[in-house]
Length: 331
Ligand SMILES: NC(=O)c1ccc[n+]([C@@H]2O[C@H](COP(=O)([O-])OP(=O)(O)OC[C@H]3O[C@@H](n4cnc5c(N)ncnc54)[C@H](O)[C@@H]3O)[C@@H](O)[C@H]2O)c1
Image 1 (cartoon, helix red, strand yellow):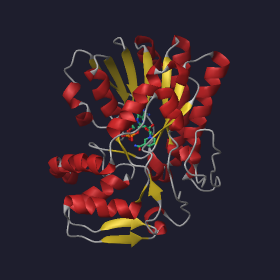
Image 2 (spheres, rainbow, N blue to C red; image 1 turned 90 degrees about the horizontal axis):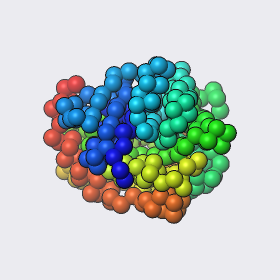
Image 3 (cartoon, rainbow, N blue to C red; image 1 turned 60 degrees about the vertical axis):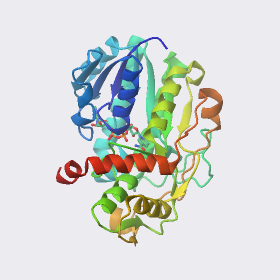
């Protein structure tokens, strides 16, 4: 692909910073727009002096700033969001404002300047559907509006609706990627509640690994390099425009099995214990039992499938946590 200038919203975050690495390594120019709420400067510090890199500290809710940066770029990776169920349960209003209004601002700027936009969506849009594996055309099954937890899933589903309406009605080039539990170096243990980060931190600090519920719920853990590869494939494939794609590992792992695997790799002398959901998230929490992507659309149209096995990805992630243990614990 010829070198392009990409605007990456949320580029100081976990997935965003790995995307920035890959784009710059491939010779592209990158502008990051991030307000550093959950993102960190140290995730992108190694690029700060690079001539093809620019960091703008600001919000996607700043209409003028988004408009200017969009005009200057060729295409937009829109990853900025209030991420994860835990943050949204704590502050659903902020989550909806950033995830819905912010995305609308990005899409409108893209339309004004005729730029292609990739929207970072989530496996959460399938809600508590038990029709597994999830296909992109399946129904979403959300819980009641009295439970704030579902506002994150709904905000991401609405982002997709917005993007596809702009595509169908106004001709905007857009694509959505539904991420399934990305993990890897730079995961924030104090962040939105990644279970991988929590288990690794507990194991490295000699604490018991806390499994919520019965631990038999499953997730499809996807190493972040695979996540980024799928994201870039979605952006660069014209046939994918107007569609959503599952970007995830086609293998599911129970949370309890994950805990045992991490404990074994770290070699920690700790227990794996069960904690009721209510203790972790409050009494009205609703959990999704299984989350597994059907990856056939991504394979057929994007020629993408996740490749990195869980044990390999976990070893790399744990090695990174070991290297950064002091700063992770002290900050
Ligand atoms: N990590 C996953 O497994 C996963 C799963 C599903 C979906 N996603 C989606 O992928 C995207 C990236 O998530 P992540 O895991 O890297 O989380 P992250 O929290 O590390 O990244 C989100 C980034 O957005 C920034 N941000 C938040 N509000 C902003 C605002 N108003 N203006 C500018 N920047 C703002 C944060 O500072 C952060 O850098 C998000 O859209 C998220 O919803 C992630």
